[in-house]
Length: 361
Figure: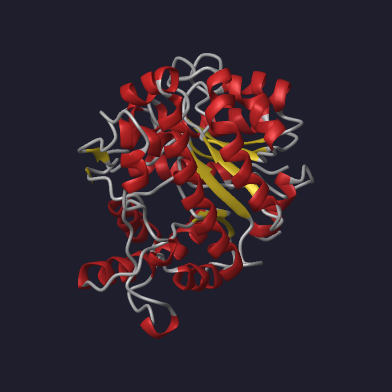
């Protein structure tokens, strides 16, 4: 069974030959470690050798710098033929918000102190033509053996908080919802127009529409379900319906204890939800499988707060086997429940992938 067949069957609740394997994010240093350990050449070869079935893609910007050319070359192959793909390949934040660090810490919240919609109307919103859809298409072609999920993290709530700061965003949802609505409308419009260009350029080349937004912490939702429905349900539904019109599955990211949102996601047409941090109280896998497993596929699960960084390879293998037992009749794509980081033991990361490949149905 090919990776595409394995993942599609899983999403359609059909039989698969083995447990499908996904990926959250590998840092560049981890990719290099995997290359050396596996004797692999480039990112696709790393994924292939690890048995990964789902590859996530990120829609790049057009750029002209040697640094990004080298990054693109290193990510895929030492002898990547430039003539076969649009290069160089550049990523940056969509909305011009100054950020820093691996996880994009916001340096300044542009709308934090605004009181009316004029600053939102006057803001230089990005142009979807800045993105390189042809590079995305070419990457999909050379990655066609995998089930592909694109165009990566596209948060509405998260971007709103980048603009306002989380405290100001929360306060204005109650005290000045007009400016929140105005910002959400423009954020959603950008994603909608961007996605339309991507869908037309890459039609038939990928399977999953990936969208992410963290509405929860480890203790529960950061906003109530009522607030989610008031501000975010319709914009998110617009993007989901657009993707469904192109026969794509919906791949939703939401960290934390997001159980209260699962019935809403199911109603909205979400097919698979990640990262499924099952170690969080209220996110027990058997419970989620029992209550929601008929309607949604779970993706992730292997603990990156404890087992992956601090456990032994045997403990990692035990966790993989336990998850496979819970999801013994399918409905699960296994990977880490968040990004694999540089300080994680390589032996643990290898153990997760090796054991997952042994989980047959």
